[in-house]
Length: 417
Image (cartoon, rainbow, N blue to C red; front, side, top):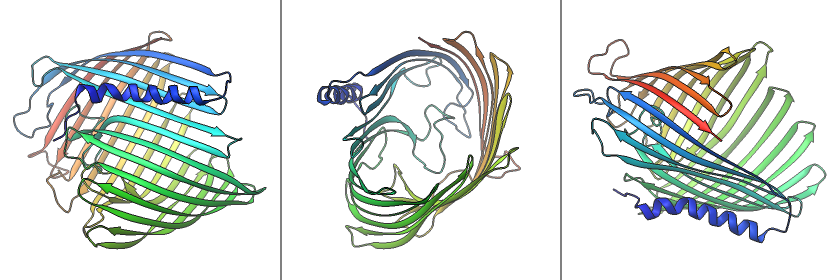
């Protein structure tokens, strides 16, 4: 198990600051808009099953202090967003020692020669779920999670082939590291090219090719992608898009694959409701595998009201480790909504349920989640939040026998300057 030492953790925001400094120094002298936003959050949580145990549930009160700072820079073909937050946790009943957690994010893009040459830079340090099929970070502080750092850099050129055609060529480097778990570290080098042509207003055709090399601790693979697609913006809130292609994986152990991939969808604004349908195949970053193929089909309904909004989504997904034959299958239903009771008081509600059919593992098949809360604006700089969450993992949907149940009550004060 890898654990980040204090030097590694505190170097993350320092490295981001160094990158920003280098960018400032190398840029020509231009006027830059700079914005700095410090904030702090104070919260108290009661959790009646902190470790999500089916038997011997342990309750605790968790006090959290979360100071953070965000910076934004704009101007001269340069955009930069930088944030860093500290999360101190105290467990009143000593179920865990006091903890210091961290989160950091850096995103920047530079363009030179009127956008002909661009560089995209990103780095994120955060907690993620070990199981990509179930995101538990929002419902637990400690269960089935790991620390992930992803660094990304991509210089590329955009060639104006004609008045309505462009050719993009470039390189991507992605470095993914994990701590607090046996997550698989990966490094990816990717060379890509994409041609796009606007046939008529709103209708764009594209075609591309990627060549990538991914290295992990013990093995690696080469990947080739070839694809073509289109996007058609018909009207505001109404569009359709599609992309289809094939990829080839060649692993160092001699295992080879050839698979179709796609990304297609459509959205229509009917005035009283917006309907969206889609399907896609993508390779999801999975802490526990070298490469996981995620195939999903989804439909969403959403509507905006004068004082709120509501949405509903249903989806079916398959998560397949690329060297295994049997995927994990998941069906999800979820609904969210918010309503402004008065100008300074917002009501929020979310409900979801999913069924996970795993080829291997010990996960509960059924997962039910509900959250209900209020946000009260004390002033422009201060807000009070109160919410209650109910989480249930079950073997049978209609029975709580052998289930793992959690109740969370959280009161929070947020201050910004």
